[in-house]
Image (cartoon, rainbow, N blue to C red; front, side):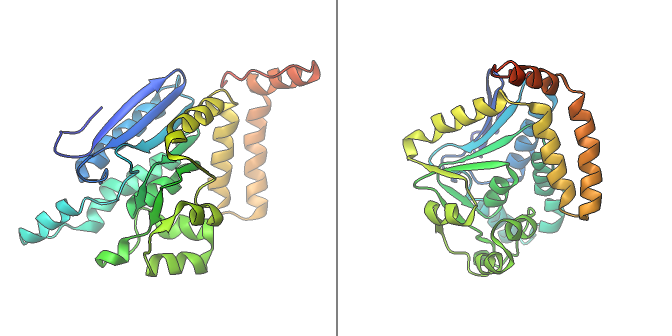
Length: 268
């Protein structure tokens, strides 16, 4: 899966039960044009429909994750006297992409090798786990070009760093080094640049060998609890746990623990 050579290409590769989606735009730091967003959405939908994929890695080539919106595309529309309707493009593009990425019923790992800015930061935060190279940098970026937050960033960022910090990060879109991102919980680990890809592969393989159904249930419960009361959340958890209790993975794991063996999960 790819885009024309003039834009950011989207590559989808598989290694056993792990699918890797890579943004590759050497001239734009993997910027997100409308065409690139559509290609990325197609890749997300492809792995969502593939039951043999049990973990997903989202990353970028060329020493960057993604710099966010493709400003060349925005400039072209302004110079033509027809500025893009950014609200409409969000509804039809990035909003759908972030929603479906976050809702994947398998764990998604963001491996951030460099800049994750604007919508690129939102994409990274829509993933379940994030690891970064030591040279990675993060920025909200929006107000630097006279825009407000989008792609769900004003929802997810306060939930990670708190309202006050999120406000400062959005009003003052300064570049944040990986160490600060780790302190704030934006990423869960930092690794040397040369170890990012193998570290992501190792962690993704570990997730792919885990209880896929339980992972999906955890993600659904977390999403539900964001807008539910404690009582509603516990009722939702009970429904999810009922289904997990009948799964082959749970039953086999209990038998393995009782016989002091390592459990093997098959995602069913």
